[in-house]
Length: 134
Image 1 (cartoon, rainbow, N blue to C red):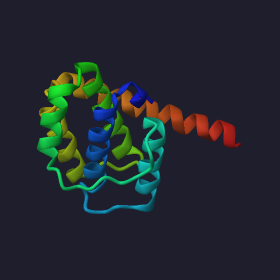
Image 2 (cartoon, rainbow, N blue to C red):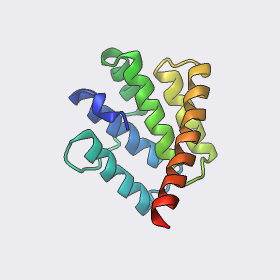
Image 3 (tube, rainbow, N blue to C red):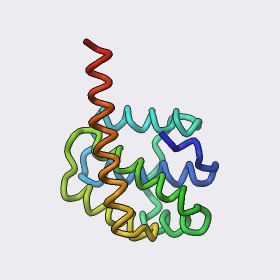
């Protein structure tokens, strides 16, 4: 939705976060692979799955050096949407999002607001899909 606002360095770091996110529950489902492809498309970068060798904290530290507050909010919102896409946010994914929130220095209040808006977005997206499919 807002990923086109990231610069080239931020795009790759965000994609690395996505790779960690989809593996947070130790299951890499086919729909998650499809999500990575869609994210690459939105980022306007070649479709690829980055290696997960860089620890999450290192990625977050690098993002703190180069990303603005707005860009960090975008990344957290998009990660919430990615992980909630299947309708289930399990404990490991919740822990991952909290690690990202803390690592990107985003307040609990901002996280709650982004989480609530993500939920609204997903409901509207579902309703729109139903409306055009029927």
